[in-house]
Image 1 (cartoon, rainbow, N blue to C red):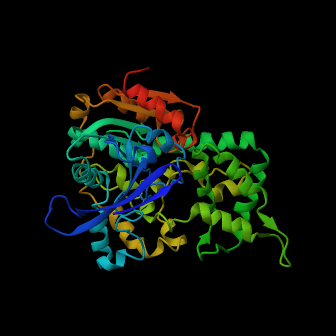
Image 2: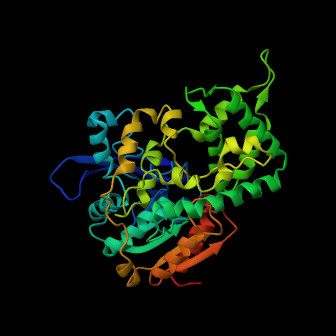
Image 3: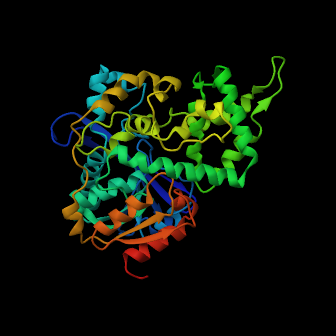
Length: 432
């Protein structure tokens, strides 16, 4: 272990060996990394543990500098473990560079089938026992981390002291098709609200999309920017500052050139920073698999369901005079053509989309008998996680207390920081 300091904190790098397949504990092993964080003045104290599960899938735990966001509140009473879920960050990374070591796309897909919430929770249980000597710990799950926390409640509640969920209560039953069927109308509301705030962006977005329809445009990474990939910038609209970020991105898109107006290098660089999956490829590869529960293949659900909402078709929009609709948290087959970080994983992703043997993730009967204190922040009209689905699940988990708010968007635990964590801890402890 290596320990070091940041202002007011002591950090320790911890690495754990876990089975790739928990059904075969003596088989292949992988590494999972966690960063322990404790307040400097409490470093020698016996403190309860809190493990943080990041959103995603495919993102390592946030790299804080000092007592940023909710972490400053957490270290007042917890020893925190910022966990890089398997395949992310420092935890045996899975990406276009490493996955060819597995062999064929079929073997890569079989390998990645072990990277869902069920395996992540089993990793947590092994790690908990090694760190705490068997004591229960608190879980803070953001977004997909909340999906993992709900699975934790379903399968290993004996390891849990308290569960705190921010923007991450999943449907216990919805298929991927049903998730996206609920998502597209919600995305449209977010786009319409953006245009109401910034009406000048209606013409700007149409002009950019029309340019991309008429020209082949390459991003600095070598990826292709198409009308459909441009629409993916709507993913920004799920964050508290997202509508403003999108507006600033659109306002200076073109520059004059000898060949006529062209999209500027600065614009393309900024677009690439939003759209590239290079830093989190598992987000794209496994995104629909997080909804799969033994009800057949996901089969590119977002792409199929989008066809039910023709207003999201850029070519049809450009043929008329309606505002262009951006899309949100949806992954499509063409992502694996346009993004160089995903292109080598194209066949692997198709095999995962065709996979049918996904195990159920949630146990409604066990959740209905839950005895672990649980509190969840549910963000009104959350772009990424359907509010109706979340509230249905909240009612299905015995004793769960909700804080439903429109003060924050999906990134509320980051934007609201200590206040959000304070509120959830008070709810879980029945102090409100």
